[in-house]
Amino acid sequence: MSGGHPVIPGFHPDPSVCRVGDDYYLACSSFEYVPGVPLFHSRDLVHWTQIGNVLDRPEQLSLSDDAASSGGIYAPTLRHHDGRFWLIVTNVNGGGNLLVTATDPAGPWSDPLPLPGVPGIDPDLAWDDDGTCWCTVAGISQVRIDPYTGETSGPPRRLWSGTPGAKAPEAPHLYRVGDYWYLLIAEGGTERGHGVSVARGRTPNGPFEPCPANPVLSHRSTDDPVQNTGHADLVQAPDGSWWLVLLGVRPGGGTPGWHVLGRETFLAPVTWEDGWPVVGALTAAGPGPLVPFHDDFDDAALAHCWISPRRRSPLHCTTKERPGSLTLHALGDSLDAPDVVFAGYRQQHPSCRVRARVDPAHGCGGLAVRLDEQHHYEIEGDADEVRVLARIGPLRTVVASRPVADGPLVLGVDVIATKELRGARSGPDTLAFGVEESDGTFTALASLDGRYLSTEVAGGFTGRVIGLYAADGTAHFDWFHYEPLAH
Ligand code: 6LW
Image (tube, rainbow, N blue to C red; front, side):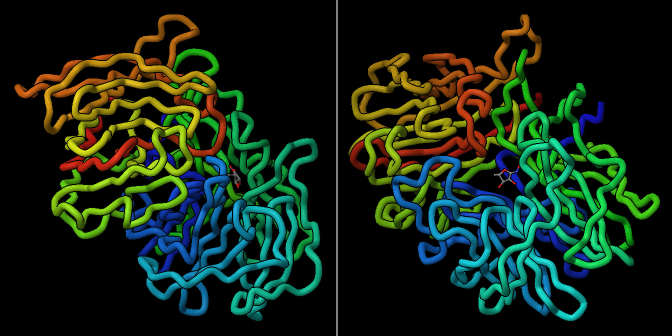
């Protein structure tokens, strides 16, 4: 049992990595959230720091209310070539494939270059020795592209369909290693059957011969605590060693196992045998001690890690209106609404404690655990009452409520992962929502089963986001505190 630990925990799927000198950069999918495509930096592939978001302007990414959760921005590819960074990605709710470039990976990134000749999803960029740029997409097909103009030459050609009988050949990445071009793909679907396969050829256009050992990585049908491993990208370290970043999930509870943190980024070593990559066990090294995240909202802008569904207008979400607070002015009247004003932080640990101080004097503000509009739990307060609400599919209910005195409230949720399975039907965790009393003690008002906020129940491609919202009028949040708990 490998017991790998994510190097970028929480909802950070479809990782794409490149190296410039001793510096690694990595980008992930972001779906309906803005800003889009989180961008990370590392010097060792294990410890990563978010340095920005690639699509951080409405001119780069604007999603309307009808962009579904798990729609929006699918898998990116990040490369460095000709002195600049290139990122190609798909907006499934707005124009399809697009290309942005930057000289500084922390940004600013360019306005998007539309790529009408690039079909489908999961676009990859690779340059031949003569500077020709090839774009390879799920399926697996390929088209020649001018990355400066976005123009393509000729129709896409099918390259390889992966292992006969395996579904969903996707996430292609093309590399020149020695005398061969290697085509790395994901196949089997991004669920429990997920895997990574590879083929090689003498040119970037093939023909490609599949690796006899395919899939070179899969945890399907194993008891590994990390499942759904796939969607990988290959990188060589300065010392000549090779590594793979990939996505995986950590299901909890009994059968079928529920994952609540989304698809996370993992790392594995790669060696070469007979001209084929051999993938080792997932790296167990994690980002180290359980470090809390605290935000007093003292800065003029929100930190890179804060994300919002579809839009974030400075008119409705700002730290400038009341210095030292995050002020949210409501649009949608609940988390069921696609235009709810919400700012969230990805849950990154199976167990965690979250607290937030809200002044609901002019409206109603809350602390929520969100998967999508149909799957969320929250505690909210106004001048008179604090309420715990649950939305599970078609069902929505007030689970508990309590009168409160006027004035600021400290709202909280304790997420506790299931340690002892009580039969096959145990859920992955429980979420206890409550308020912190004036003496600092926490009074839980309701404890809810976390399976209903899992991907296996809700579906989709994202993971839990724990955040702040306004359901009516204006809510001012003085601080937000996320405390990982030992699991
Ligand atoms: C992505 C595809 C996949 O486009 O899921 O796991 C899709 N891989 O490659 C959304 O993440």
